[in-house]
Image 1 (spheres, rainbow, N blue to C red):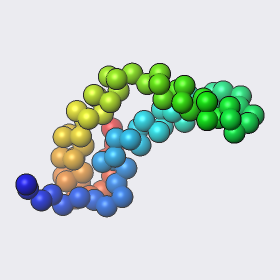
Image 2 (image 1 turned 60 degrees about the vertical axis):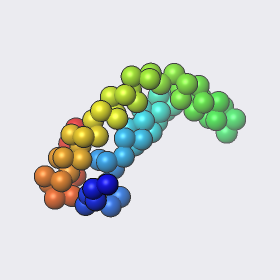
Image 3 (image 1 turned 90 degrees about the vertical axis):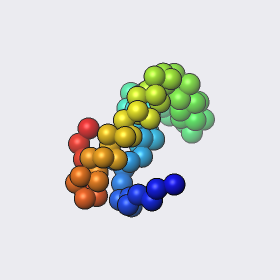
Image 4 (image 1 turned 45 degrees about the vertical axis):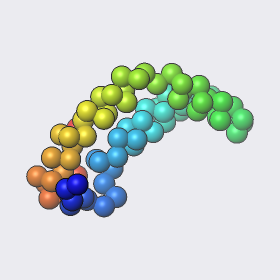
Length: 78
C-alpha cells in the first residue's frame, strides 16, 4: 500500500459532501414544518438519488486527488 499525503479536512476529497449539497438543495425547496416531515423528506430524497451520481463521484476521485496534490493541498474547483 502506498502512503499518500492528504490534505486534512478537505471537502474536495470527500464526495459525500456533494451528495449532502444535492440533498440540501432538494429539501430546501419543500415547505417543511415539522421534524417528522423533515426526516421523511430526507429519506425520500435520499432514495431518489440516482446510482449514477455515486458512480460519477467515485470516478472523480482520481482527478480530484491529483488536482489537490498539484495544488499542494489547497482547494480545487470542480
